[in-house]
Length: 151
Image (cartoon, rainbow, N blue to C red):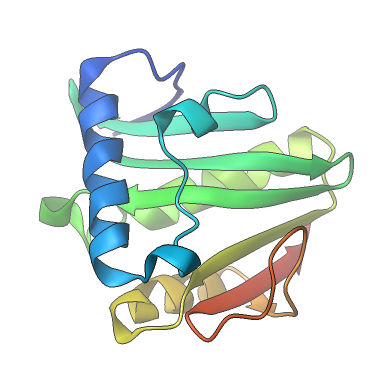
């Protein structure tokens, strides 16, 4: 597996993200859905990575600059066939290192509170994220869990 910075121009990553947004919409009420679509990920404040196994996308993740010191983890996804195979851990380790290299001193995230998101919350806790209050433009939401960690 290799991790590549992705310009989001390829059809494979577009389909991977379409599935991600679709899945999030099927699980989370629309007013609580914060997954970014392809256009929102193509903004200058977002850096996006794909995890490739050969020519196949098996995972993705991004960071969005909130201010010069604080970034938000976005769009973490692992292909269903590769869950529990180390893809997410490999990618999260990479993103944390890249966020440090970019000069951020804090990395935060929003994820779902439903049982579906429990494996993600456990992964984030394993990497030192702790629960926090809503940040940036988020508001308290029973469907959301907010987490953060210093870099």
